[in-house]
View (cartoon, one colour):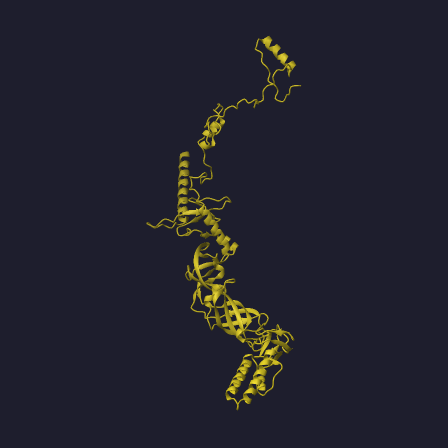
Length: 523
C-alpha cells in the first residue's frame, strides 16, 4: 500500500515538472537569431572623461564625482588637437548656437567719418601790391557776405598818387612835342603807356583808369570784391598802414564745398574715382547730400594711417558750413555671391582667424580660416570652410577657452596606462613588497642608517664621503650635559649615605645614583 502511494506521488511530480517546462518554453520570448558570419557589435575604443578633460581609460570607470566615463567608438574620436566634446546639458547651459556656412552677396558699403572744408579753388585774398594806409573799411567783420564788385575798402598810397601824376605829365608832354619833336613825343607816349600798364598790374580798376585818361586823379583807391563770397578772415583795421603784399582780407565762395573723408587703410582698396558718396550729419537731421569722389590722396597719413578722399558737394543754400562733421558712406556693387559667416563666428586674434566647426552633436573642431571682405554682420571666408558646414556663432569664446585648456593639458603629457601608474583601475594604490613593514615592526635592533646616505656625493662633506659623523672635538665646551663634579657638596646627602650603607651590607659594589634631570645642586 505504501509502495503504491509513493509511486503515485513520484508520477504526479514528474508530470507537474514536465508541464511547467512545456509552459515556460511556449511563453518564453523568442531571441533573434544572429546570422552566421555577422560581425560582432563594435567595441568602444576607450572611455573619456564626462567633463571633457583629457583623461581616458581603456575600461569603464567613474570619475571623482561618481560620473560614468563616456564610451568613444570608432569615428567619434577627436581628429585634431583642441577638439571639444560637450554633453547636451553643457551645450544648453552655455548657450551654444550654430549656423550654416552659406553663399551670399556682400553689399560693398564702406563707412567713414568726414567734414566739410572750403574749396581751395574758390578762395581769394586782398593783398595790395603797393604800400599805403587804409582810409575807410567797408568789409569790417568776418562772415560778411559780399557781391562781386562791391567796395571793400579805400586806401591812400603815395606810390599810386605818384604813378597817376606821372601818367598825366607824360600825356601832356607827348601832346606838346608832337609837332616840334616827334621823336620826343613818341618817347613820352611810351612812358605814359608804361605807367598805365603799371597801374593795371597793381590792380587798379577800369573805372579809375578811364577817369585817369580823362585827366582826373583819384586821391583814394577803392578795392572791390572779386566774386560773390564771404569774408573768412580780416586782419586789417581802419587807419592801419600796410606793406606791399600784406594780406588785408580773405574771402571764400561757399556755393560749392569739399567733403574730406578719412578712410582706414584696410578699406582703401574699395575706393575709386567717380564713386557715389552720401553725407549725413546729426546737425542736419533728415537730410542727405550726395556727390562723387573727385580726388584720392596718393599717400597715407602716417599719424592716423588713413587715406584722404575728397568729394565735391553743391551748397546753394549754404547749410554745409566749413567744419561740419558727419558720416560718409561709399556705395558699390554687391558682386557675385561668396561664402559668408556671421562676424561673431570668427575668433580673430590679429595673427590668425579661427572658427569652431560642428562635426557632430556636441563635438566642435577648431579650424583656421582666411577671411576677405566684410559687410555689416557678415564676413567673407576665402579658405577653410565649405558651403553647408555648421559653425558656432554664440558662446564660441567659452569653447575656445576649453579647447585651449585641453590642448595645454595634452601638451603636458597623456595619463599613464592602467597598471603602470601608482593607482590601478580598481582604485587601490600600488603595494610594496612588505619589507618596509617588516623593518618598521621588527623588535630586533637594526644598524642606524648613516647620516647623508642616499645623497649625491657633491652634497656630502668633502673629506668624509659617506662615513658616519664624528664626535665633535673637545674645545673647552662639553656639548652634552655632564654629571656635576664632587666639589665637597653632596646634592643628595641622605639618599647617598643610605645607598652606600645598603651596598656595604649586601656586599655589592658602590654605585652612584644618577642626578635627577631637573634637580639643580644647591649653592
